[in-house]
Length: 300
Image (cartoon, rainbow, N blue to C red; front, side, top):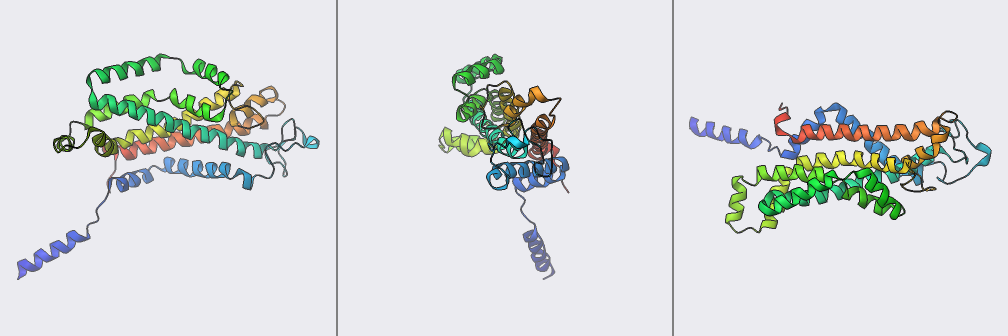
């Protein structure tokens, strides 16, 4: 009777043990990374503010007020005005929508292409692997900035084309990382078992391999957003990005470069916005890297 009670007690204790998923483990580790959590909050707040610009901005981004030209920050214009009297705060919000959107969608394009190339190269190996990796090395050797400048000038710097161009020139690192991860995963027993029972190769890649290498893919995508924002800002600063009157943080800096000394607020605010958003993205990527790597997890 005592043995039965002991067995029942153990069963009840085991039933109370919570099953912890990989996502929960990663989330708990990410929460411990205070800087990454702070970066996530700041990034989310800034992104929401930029996308809600038509609602929260006090003016339209192209409203001209010649009576308040070159005004320093005041209660009415908290970030001042430019040479046409346009409100700088409003333009920073509207510019953020374009810059952040280009960053996010460019990173997604680069991640999808890089994941496809890396997964095919790592899974099939042989000649296909050799061809795809040599193609990746060739693409890596091409200087990105001159190509971006040439392609942007031919496409009139349209936003969809800029997203596509930046994405097509930023997939190589993801391809290499994914290939290495696939090579380490594809020899596992569950992959061999899936092949033995007749699971199609495409299904093996999508259902069994990619979910197990999501960590480096997510981290790479996150860092790619910051890189794409910097590229867009650089192109716009050179006058080859999104063209005025549509504001972006980059072309706002380009317009203010001749007045950096006399009207520093026109340079400071979009420059600080780029700095903060890229720093936040890098902090998030660092936190995700720790959270997705089982060897770096802290178990309580």
